[in-house]
Image (cartoon, rainbow, N blue to C red):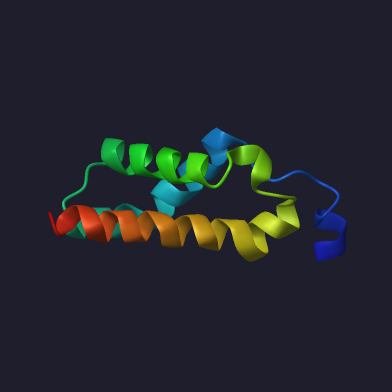
Length: 83
């Protein structure tokens, strides 16, 4: 299945941001971070990773890129709340 999914590109920018925001919105409420700010943090981290074109295939997104992006945004959220 993963071999088949490697034939297709990963998500676009909007889909990647939506995935992360939906994944982290419960955590964001704990840190008192608005959805708008969470979206901006995700966009910033996605840009630092090279943009949506660098997320790889669907298989790469599922196995690696999505987890890396979520981790990076979670770190941003933690550093934001410690200010």
